[in-house]
Image 1 (tube, rainbow, N blue to C red):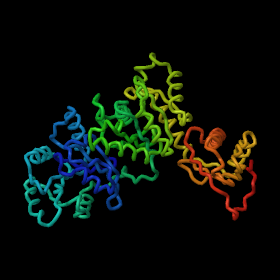
Image 2 (image 1 turned 120 degrees about the vertical axis):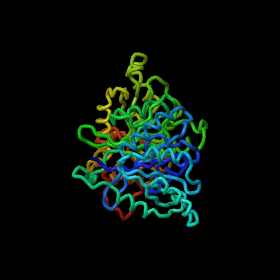
Image 3 (image 1 turned 180 degrees about the horizontal axis):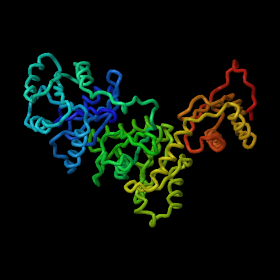
Image 4 (image 1 turned 90 degrees about the vertical axis):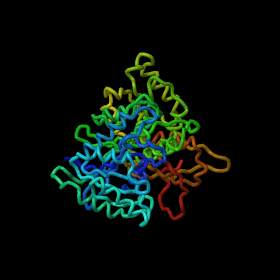
Length: 448
């Protein structure tokens, strides 16, 4: 038995995603008045009285999906219900028990795990009597309001009391697992790869663009190591946004990039690179995230464009990320996926690396002897020394007489030297220039 799952279910628009965010303590699931926004299972690890549990949000039961994905959404809900240790059956105190609530109650009647009826939107004492109606479902009723932050502790205590007894297999995570964000424009095969990695139909896969709307964390193992794959909504141009759902989806995907250890930037091998791909690559670069270009659906395009041409195509298009490795994969079959993940682990290790100040200054001295910084009008640039001040990303500070006197092209030259002569060959390096203070007693061993 793994980490117990607490699954949130209910009809649409009772506040399931609001409750999920409230209990998780973070805005993870999209909250929108449009019915059917949540499709895939969204999960988050929480701690309850010293134990870990996985909180899972699901789509609304009984909704007819606008993109004809009703069957897939229902499969995701049923999978979550089947794996649940506790079910939170969410209802709306303001609207009362509607026919669809009765249908949900009927569906949960024969499950063999505890079910807690959570009467959400009980925003004040005057609404509490209305919640009594839900006792007809034969379950314990907890009156809460995610919006007004009412009775959260009571609900958490009830959940903790009903968790199954811990087993020998249930262990507290001792080390953080590597988080891999899968990003790209719509229909590049991100969710298909997640299902391949998880060896389960974990994400809804459809030819309908924009099927994934939330950023979804999926845990999987490879060669005895645990990973978290973050599936994200497909990016599209802002002028093409159909509404708030697209807007929030874009921001969820951007936040997933920010919290990832490594980013897999997906391209469809059967499609040309577009403006959205370039915008997305720029955002990844702005966040200084290790990135691997994943050219997916290679089985469909290998004969149309040889590997060498695709490499040249990517290098010419993304000149500022010339160091990013490239993988040609088929997510559906798993071809080359393991090699890609092994390379992603190498990138993660590189991003955590450090170079001693002595080693760094030897690189700097050699670089400046070979190619001194160009003189600027009225100023002769002098770089005194360098030191690494942080990792993930590797962050280097250059101390000089005048930071403005070191042009951008020379900074890029030095970054290339550091990348070539260190273990940071395929990851972004953050570079700062700082004026040396008179109180700094270091010598000018790196002066050029």
